[in-house]
Length: 79
Image (cartoon, rainbow, N blue to C red; front, side, top):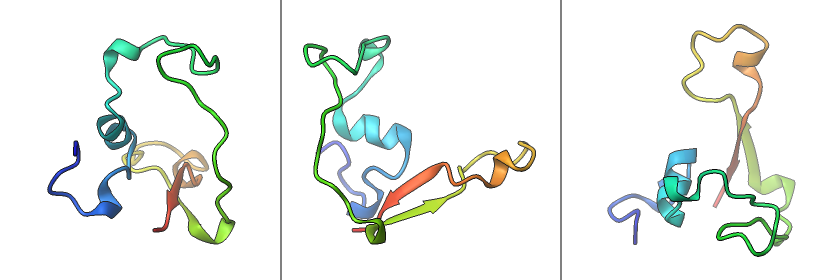
């Protein structure tokens, strides 16, 4: 609902878009995401096969020198 009007493939294809889609805002800054009683936390999920994940260099690092500019910082789930 937070990504209305966008194709499904664009709902979470960037850090800000993930935060918007999940309702994550500045009120969650400095929360420890490694503990279960935190308002936001990471837990184990389903394994995704390597064939469904693509990697690309990070967008917007035009002035960054190599090799950092070309490192595949982005992991894209191909749906």
